[in-house]
Image (tube, rainbow, N blue to C red; front, side, top):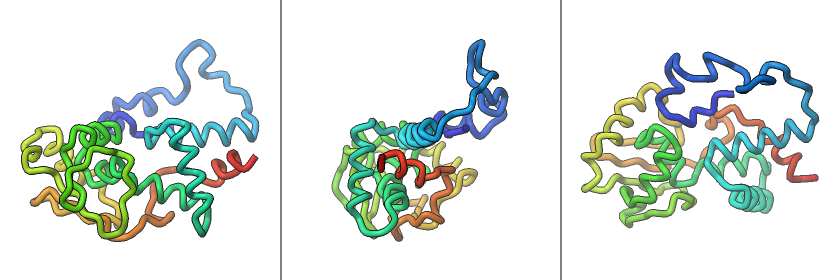
Length: 192
C-alpha cells in the first residue's frame, strides 16, 4: 500500500508501489493468507508508520482515545491528526511528516506566538501555527507551499500562504480524514 512516506516521489510514476506492487525478494509474489490477528497488526503498523510513532507512543494515544467519550477509533485518529508535526505537514509547510517533524524540532514554528520544538504537542481548536520570520526564506518550505495545491488542505485547517500562517478551525472528524485507515481493526487488536 502506498503510504506517501517519501514526499513528492509518491506523486510521480517513479513510486515503487506503482511500478512493483509486491514485496521485494525471491518469495515476494507468493503470498499466503493472513490471519485476523495478522490483518489487525498490519493495520496498526501501517498507521504507526504513517504518523511516525513508536509503539509506546501509539499505545498511549490509544489509551487516551479509549478514555475519551465517543467512538475510540475516531478519537484515536483525531488525536493523531492534531499532533503539531502532522498539522504542519497537512498545512503544506513540509512534503512529508518526517520533514515536518524535523522542522518543528529545529524550532522553525511558533504556536500561538510562542516558539515550539516538540512535534507531539496536541493542538486545540483555534490554535495558530506560524512560520518564524527567520525561517521564511528556506527553499524547501517555499517549494512545499507551492506543491500544496496538488495535495490539498483539509477543511478543518485554514492556511494563509502570504503570511506563512495556519490555524486549526475545527477538530478533525472521521469524514475529514482521507487516509485509508480502518481504525476498527486497531481497536479490535488492542481490545484482546
